[in-house]
Length: 101
Image 1 (tube, one colour):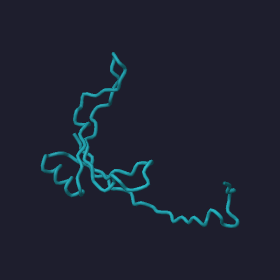
Image 2 (cartoon, rainbow, N blue to C red):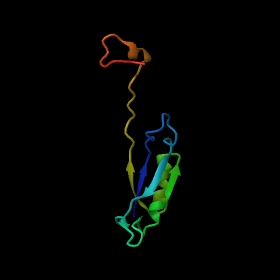
Image 3 (cartoon, helix red, strand yellow):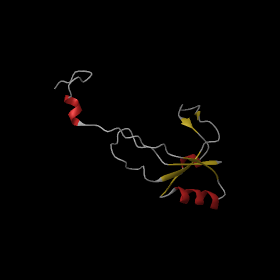
Image 4 (cartoon, rainbow, N blue to C red):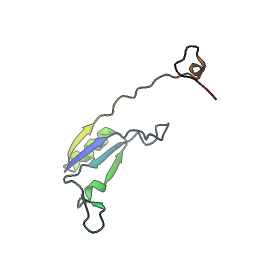
């Protein structure tokens, strides 16, 4: 079973960087999920996919995987692109689109 080590992206409903400073180790599913014939719920017989371990650094997560003999894959985070914004641009002359109250 392969473990995936990554730094989670921020939630679309967050404006801050909460829960994005740690690294996560979780297991990739080996078999696809299938609907239960009785209830129709999606189920799986793998319990490892429910495990999610949090680490302070990437090196700690890699050391844990090596210590326990886990095959792992590291997904590096994409660099954050910050676009500078100014409140005064809302009232700029020649602005594309109308601004109303």
